[in-house]
Image (tube, rainbow, N blue to C red; front, side, top):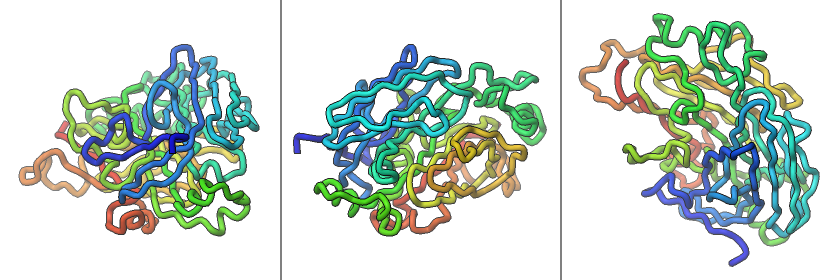
Length: 374
């Protein structure tokens, strides 16, 4: 058992360094050192399941790699597992290594593309290694992200559509969106929902040394655990927020939190095999982006206003939560219901709510909080 790490989820100290969740890693000069390791992770119901994970050598947990458009990015990957693995970022062809032998090391070096949300994975034996946990978020901040009118956005100006630019220009100006512009590079205004699922039977077979044909994965996949950034249920939202709370780690990167008029970006990715339908209460979201078949980013020509949106396997979609007055609030600010006002996000694919513990809501669920009026 000394060959791998143990990661224990604590519902008391959610967000602590020992969580199998995610934390930002912004490397000086765009250099990242990752390892591939086997771990035993505790699920929401107390069961330990074997997983594979990318680690940042400087911190526990699966790292969120963040760079700026145009950076020369270097990612060193050391394979500490007993099996060969690979590395790749769909949509960035030069960020790929076909195979890294056990104990071996490989390096990818490339120029950071236009601003947007990307995912790094182990593409070998697809989708086996990915669904065992070898995935993570790669976020590129734009070098010039403002609209022509000067409003900040998470995207490079060269990729803006008139509709996306108009939405960000309306924030803090239009009568529907009083308050603030979106604030770039602020973890309180930039959230990540990286969805995944775990089949403990496949994990146990792999851990026992069984050779699992990749073609057999989809027909036999029976997920029991449904995760956001490696967490589920009670653990996806912080339970004590004070001046020392770190919004860049664990549940802090998941839960939108702020006053009316503080619009928040939510970056959605699905590393698993199940299609999800995140559904949010309290506000509608605006759909900002999709990806082409080759993995490259495309901004939408229509910013649809939705309360649920599909997330197919390997899809990436950014949405904007406007933090506006709920449309069904007759009296505002409310007089009888005190702030903070909490609104649930749950998946309309119902199996992802009731699995892994058997009690709703211990699956792929979280909430967002409005802490006060404008």
